[in-house]
Figure 1 (cartoon, rainbow, N blue to C red):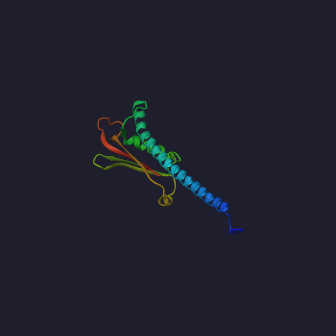
Figure 2 (cartoon, rainbow, N blue to C red):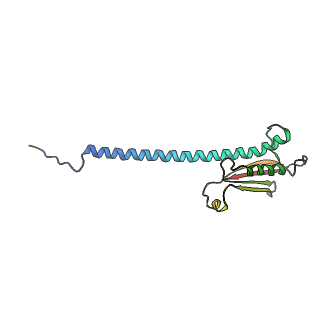
Length: 161
C-alpha cells in the first residue's frame, strides 16, 4: 500500500529557508537601528563636550590674558567676554555649531551680557529641528579688566545649536 504525499506550493525546506531569511533581515534591521541610535547619542555627547570646551575657553582666555598662563580661573570681565564674542564672529563656525548664544546672569538673575551668533540666515534658524545644547557655569564677573576689586558672582550660560 502506497501512501500518497501531497506537496504544496513549497516544500518544508523552502519554507524554513524563507522564515530564516526573514528572521535574519529583522535582526539586521534592529542592529542597524541600534547603531543609528548609538551614533546619535555619541553625536549629542560630542556636541556637549564641544560646548564645555567653548565655555572653558572663555574662562581660560580671561585667565591667560591676566596671568600670562593657562591657569583655570572663574573670573571674567565684560571687556574680554566681548572680545571673545568678536573672535567667534570672525571664525566661520565654532566647533561645528550653526548658532551660538552667550549670556551672563548676575546673582539676582539679571542679564548682564547677552550676544548670539548665527552662521546662517535667520529663516533657516527657525526651521532647524536640531537640539539646543546648553551649559551653565558659575563665574565671577568684573565690569572691566582694570576693575580687579569687585567681583560679582554670576552664571555664564553658553548655548549652541
